[in-house]
Amino acid sequence: MFSIKLIHAYGRERYPLSVFVPFAIVIAAAGIAAAGSLPTVRDAVTGCILAYTLVLVFRIADDLADLRSDRLRHPNRVLVRASSVTPIVVLALMIAGGDIVIILRQPRAGARLAVFAAISIFLVLWYRLRERLRAGPLASAHVVLIKYPVISLLTCANWDGLTLHTALASFGTIYLGLCIYEQLHDHAVRESRGGTSILAAEAGLLVCIPLLMDSLVWISLCNLGVLCVSVVVVSRISYNHRETEDTEDTEIAQRRSSDSLQVGPPPSHFEKVSCYYCQATESESFLTAQDDLTGRAGTFTFITCTRCGLRYQNPRLGIEHIKAFYDQEYIAHRQKTNWGPLTVFFNLVMDRHDRQKEKLVRSYVKLNAQSEVLDVGCAVGTFLQKVRKRHGARVVGVDFKDLRGCQSLEGVEFHCGLFYEQPLESERFDAITMWHFLEHDYDPLRTLQTARDLLKPSGCLLIEVPRLDSLTFRLYGNRWPGLQAPQHTVLYDREMLLRMVRRAGLKVVDYLPYGAFPAFFYFFAGAAFKLLKGRGLNLSKAIYPYFVGQILFAPILAFEKHLNFAMQTIICKREGSEEV
Image 1: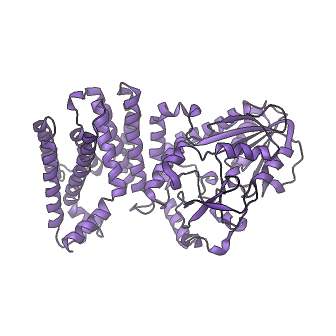
Image 2: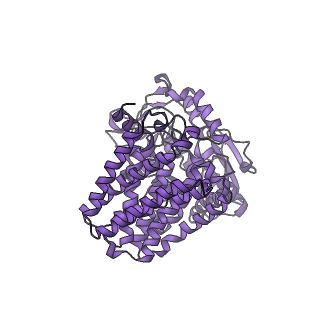
Image 3: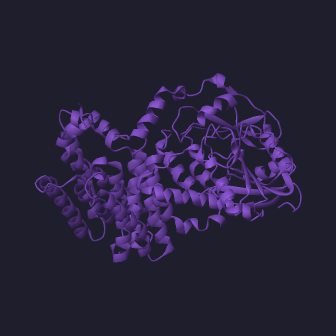
């Protein structure tokens, strides 16, 4: 293979910019956090460049050292098929020379150069001795990953600001995060003897490490690094990158390969609609979105009504065609209960989500055995079960998909179909909830008017939806998880949500800039969607870095109720309190 072509093919296969640029920034950020002071712009840029090029040099070294085993394990890799690896070796030497020049221009250049030489010699010796030492995949991975905290140290501009506890916290976070990733990503490492125990121990240490930092700023920087590493992990284990699949993922892939939606819905499946608020047809383009969660093909357009300002999807899939997008992979309908080592933790978190919903309802409605609660878009019904078991209330659920076979709907009066077509008595319910339902609705004004008629005079309607005018939308734009095309038909900012419920004849009791749904999911998923670019998020694998990141971001998320992160909740009545 021609040298330039070889280098280009190798870079695309083993060193994609979308993964390693943010990874290099994380490595450099860890060095900044360890130093305890913000660097100059020049030092920050230099650190990122040094991190990026050092990671490349050491990755090439890894691949060259593993070349013999890759001929058996990965025969289709670029280096394995190349007639000569000389161009890659020359490239690595040239980049290493540039790194040495950069290092020599920094403070304490002699010490830095000694550290660079030491880690290089150490890795060369390890590559030569690991077979004689009979090191297994688990030990080998942990030894080789030592290079990354060393790279972070080399990128640190202010060595005088280093302290033992900040260095341990920052560099330890990088090291443990990558060790955990390696065990989750590589089945040979994961299945090694003692792998599960070591994984659990490292996850525990990773959670505790930020406590070593001596200020909230550096805790946040450290946790930001973990989040970015987690996102890189997700991008590397996406559907398009992974080299191995478990049984469940293989079945999903097979279903997708035979699914006509893989080429996108045909134009005949779409329909034009008027504005849901004012029925106008005049509009201007807002943005286009994809099904970032599952990775199904198709592009969906959102527009802005030029008369009232509502943002909505137009054209939209006809109601008979949207059903295919609410299959068992849809996040609210997933019934999977086995999440490996995280099963208990996952169940606790999901239970907390239902507790937060129940707590919100209790803040506005007195629940007891005489109460009747309706959840519109109830999915598998876990929230209704929480209300039924805790308060003895009579509970009713409505969902577009027939989920009556779910065990969690036992004891629930379940109705399948469109909400406003159900035979429910007027003025029956003490509380009606819509947890992330209204943004899916094909006729939101009619839905709100129906809810108004079903409420008792003292009853409350609670609606939670993603907030368009939020921090996460400004961060992620057309990769914002709140778009969730094509399922989401309407996008609500604060003003439009208030206007919509008032037009339906409802009085606003309260407005909350948060919801029961965790805002961290939007931060995490949005960053993953940006990297994956429509390839789909593997929830079975993403669950590990997601939960770690959520724990580490707890100090920041503690302020969620006071900040406009992602969600909004509005509480309405037929009559009573004055509007906000």
